[in-house]
Image 1: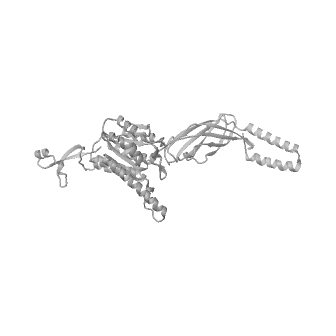
Image 2 (image 1 turned 135 degrees about the vertical axis):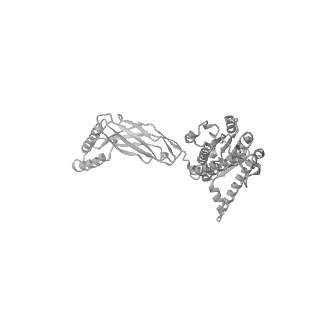
Image 3 (image 1 turned 90 degrees about the vertical axis):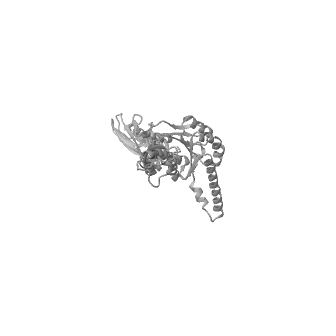
Length: 431
């Protein structure tokens, strides 16, 4: 039961009347009983809330930051009109403003109301209760009850780096020969023979074919296909650190999606493993047409765990997934302690069998601090930032000497630079 403002106004008016006409205890008692009786009658005549049938439909998935709509259908099977207010409750991260709707459902009819959402965090957002307040015909009091109407809205990674995909695909088409450009490199696949032109690499001359022909012939090559690219997302504590407005994990996901889209179009097989101290998500054997939907669905509910990543277990999982040589793209932090104590001792097991690229999200705030001067505090900040930058460079050099390709870039640049590194490795036949 709920009381309305109209009953409060009526009580205020009754208090004035009692004060002027019968300012006694009996007068107060009579007025109070009259108000209670009116409220009870109003509640008794209000439409029943518990008999309502409430159903949901609408969007079940949306990219982070984009609008979504979930609709409620309220059916009134009772013989009395339900008139009042409806509240559809969602968690704050679902991005729903206070969703209170006017409701008027005649007997035996149904009405639909819409809830507009714009998630502010990636992952699953679960609907809470639907609360209905049915006001009586006099508007003095109301029945109130809640219905559990479950619904899940999944906020998918936004894939903001997809704007870089057309330019990388154009470069891929050039590499693949569809723009009449052929490349040569160790490990690439033979494509065809053509006549030598000035500027060709003399190492590409096919002397046997030239001896049989009337001109000098050179071999052309096309990039290797059907290679395996394994994306490894580190979901440990370092992935929880925020760079700008989002965790490092989100920037790593964005880079992984761009690389996956590019590699799938290049004819390579792309798999995903998300790991901290156990496998958190896995995508394997998905064809190119369904790869991106499978990846975003697997990534959406992932959150960074506040635990130290188990690199030994991570490497074991990678080695157990395939004996075939692959390009392992490890999206993790280029921090001193995790790399030196966790990754380096087991890195040799990985590089002996697979090609390895380590992609790390750099904090642009560190570069801003390094440029700071003027006040004493700013100078100390700049010195600390310079030291951190030099330490990252040193770690990058250590990893490079062990055969690891290192891509270290701010969130907005990590995805395109990682894609460029993949294209360079593919053009060189090093996948």
